[in-house]
Length: 182
Image (cartoon, rainbow, N blue to C red):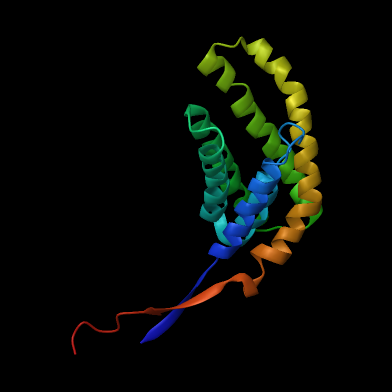
């Protein structure tokens, strides 16, 4: 007996491509990037694990290609992964609307910047906490502005055109075992 299974690999490749492209733009304001804006619609469509993996791998792959891996990669990737998984639980009972994406992006950005911005410098490089806190304020404002803008415009479009678009899913035949004895 033959069945089919769908793969959404093309959708993930499109998402990773968008994230890489925008993060590699020269003269981009600091921390204005679409990881969260892409992870939210992917989590809504593909579940907590799908949201976690997209966000986590976006950081790991980008660091691997650009700056190399370090303990900061683990911290930022895990933090974004948790946010990606949390997005599923937030969006499972909400529509794919700009307002919902914006609300989640504000909370997620504040969480991400608090966890990463207030821990990495002080814990890894001995930066005084107050220096990290004061330095984090403009960084978080840029991050909020970018994430809110991407959430309002990009996230609903990504959900409609990529995540929920079944024409981008590929179906492959798969054999199933129906009986061990013949």
